[in-house]
Image 1 (spheres, rainbow, N blue to C red):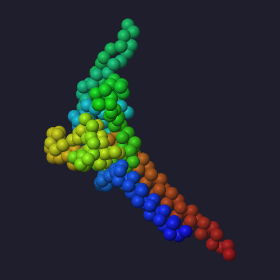
Image 2: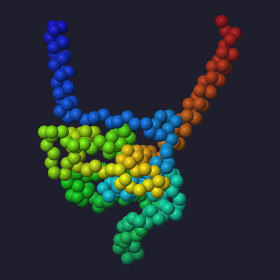
Image 3: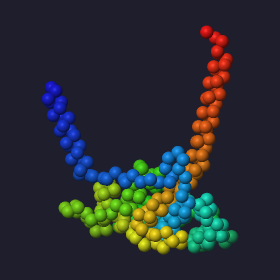
Image 4: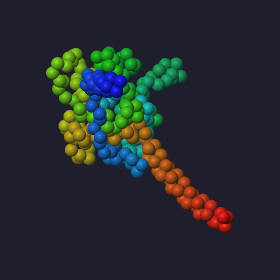
Amino acid sequence: MKKLALTTFITSVMLAGSVFAAGDVLHPKQMQWPFDGVFGTFDKPAIQRGMQVYKEVCAACHGLTRVPFRKLSEIGFSEAEIKTLAAEYTFTDGPNDDGDMFDRPGRPSDKFPSPYLNEKQGRAVNNGAYPPDLSLIIKARPDGANYVYSLLTGYKDAPKGMGMADGQHYNPYMAGGKIAMAAPIQDDQVEYQDGTAATQDQIARDVVNFLQWAAEPEMEVRKSMGIKVMLFLFVFTVLFYVAKKRIWRDVH
């Protein structure tokens, strides 16, 4: 019976290994981010650069429809810069006094628009794949920051024997290894206004910093409040312990 159980266990492990190899997905690279940990904070220069990357590279395919332009003031954009940026987009509004819809320039209160009118249009221009909205992408994926960074920098030539349909690209960090999006970033794809060298690694890091902020703009406030609460509890625990010792010191 012991031999049978051992044989069954070994067989199960071998089968599990075969299944994993067949659908092999690499674990995301484990990077160090300024927002990691209890004391993590936002790197605002990196977030600003990431905003530039989103606007110049990502916005052609991906929306950011949960983020209003006015929130950019939190990462260092001036009111004038925000108004100028919002006005670059056109929004359909209305109806007016005549009952008609009309187009107008964007306002700071508007949110970043989707590049598509609807999902069907998005799929039609992307070989059937619908590019996800990036507003919450860091929160929507396990180990989100590392996953997005790994995906952006992980494109490779497909292994021999792996069939790739037209419009598909190989990325070992994608389930199944096949992704409809071509490698979106490369060296010197953008020209940073602050003079930072725009390597592929730097661009990927910056856009991840931006998307982390977009997904959780209240992070610094939340962490600061958490630290204050823990200090409060620690101080009161000490005080209550001292009070307890004094109150019960004469009781035997």
